[in-house]
Image 1 (cartoon, rainbow, N blue to C red):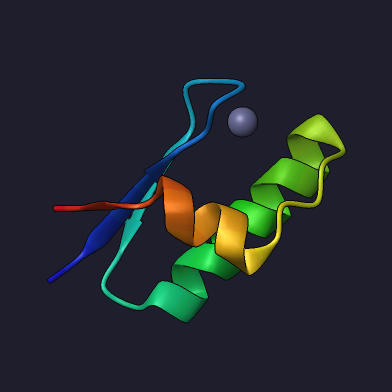
Image 2 (cartoon, rainbow, N blue to C red; image 1 turned 30 degrees about the vertical axis):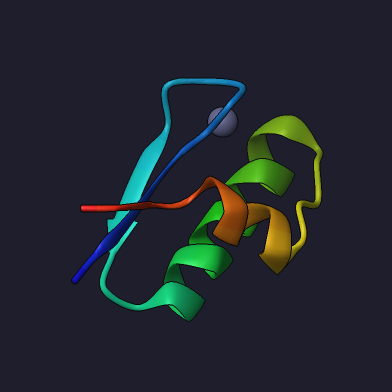
Length: 50
Ligand SMILES: [Zn+2]
């Protein structure tokens, strides 16, 4: 089962079957594009199962 995360600040969406990888990708995006550092917990809360 895969998880998907949609960025709250832009149209960015990412999907992965590996939660750790997904969190890493989202954190990288947030830092690069929005200068934000969401915690793994924040990202898990925002994940959808797809
Ligand atoms: Zn974004």
